[in-house]
Length: 423
Image (cartoon, rainbow, N blue to C red; front, side):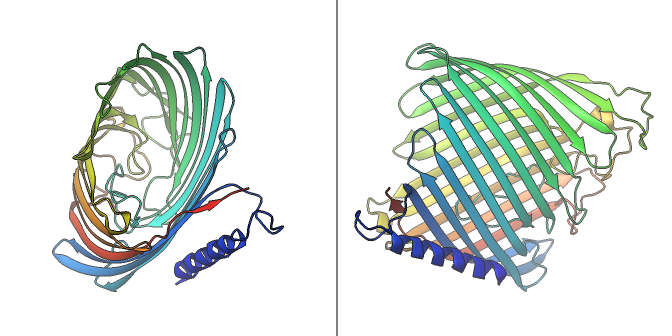
């Protein structure tokens, strides 16, 4: 109910703002801003199927966005909130969720700086009309787990000439589990790279990055140094490919005093792995399709103290009809993900007790139909199958999913046209 009241308040404020910008340009009450406002609301009913049981939930959500038209100082704000409650059965995804993202850019003739921040909270897997695959692409899918995350990013780029661009960036993020359903994790990242355009179709690039992962209650942290070289090619105006690969050096740091075993005096063996990212994108008249593969070390998804991950993802989307007010859209996505615990930590007693391997396969399908200028109808399906050798899995609350979890959802959305504000 609180989330619903908040959404209605946001919509009311936006409507008030729209009314204020309606007078002609000479009005003294005109807002001194230029930008675009967008907002939407949705009501969805969901059926969940897991371990032979069925539950039903209701969900209400809203999204609000604002972006400026400034080319030199672009600003954007995005706010999403919602609440789900159980109508019958267990309702693994019941609970509120909120997200806020901010972005500020500074663009000059040769240099640009982009700053961003994201804060999110959710219990279970939230439903987001702007991202039908939300939750299915998480490193390790959980049920009924409360998570708070915050991330800060910064990217700087400088044009060395007509064909070369130097870039550098950094990020810091925290993932916190208030109910103890995962391992509290903080991540630090810095990178620098150079991109060189060879011709109208081909570009090459190189990048070095450093990542560090730390865990609450653990004396062990992980450092990963990665150097990759890549190539991007535009084959036609509709087909683009990108591939990058390189070595990844992983080391472990142990602090004192340390409750874990082996003791701090015993160094943990590092190793040399590899990082790979490859993708192909096709935006033909049939629809927009993307296929991607990645391999490398990450923080562990909140249930492992570091992990080596292989991921394959595929997506497809197409809209039918030339009239926006009656357009029909279909979106499909699927993938496979293998998350392996780092073997160097097998003999170390770490917090969480969930070191193990995870295999996950997922698929989603969403169809929507515009019903005039303001409303749309929606139907969706999500299926995720996840298995693990971890002692923490089993599908119980506060544990990673182990089995097949499916949802079928139907809803109606309110998405009015964007509001354009002019200074």
